Amino acid sequence: MERQDFEMYRLLRDKLEHRCEMLCRLYAEQYYDVDRDDRQIYINNVELGKSGRILINFSDGTVEEMLYLPPEYLWRTDEEVKVLMRLDRDRKEEDLKNIREQHEGK
Image 1 (tube, rainbow, N blue to C red):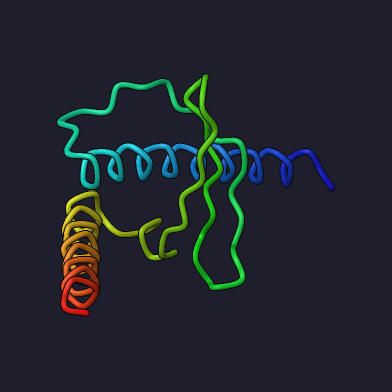
Image 2: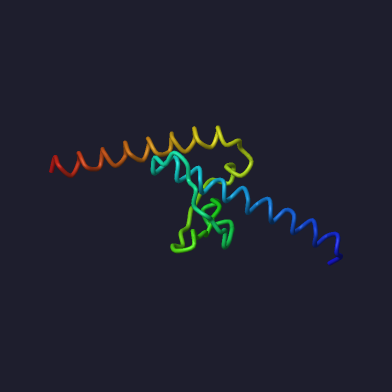
């Protein structure tokens, strides 16, 4: 591998890690009702899962976590991602509500 190729790879990797950090912050804001996520986030690994979703392995210095997100979140704007996350959260809450109602009815 030539130096120029390596530098391009490193630049791409830095951009990917930065975007993944932003996605982790957006996730915390949307799913945990945090106004602003000020944690120091370290991206440990990014890979494509078997389901086709991206797996982001990250830590905030004390706790290591994983997020599985749709790959299109990488190139969508933050506003688009917020809307999609909000819709996903609402859908999941509705599904949980239906499950609880089914169990209560038995």
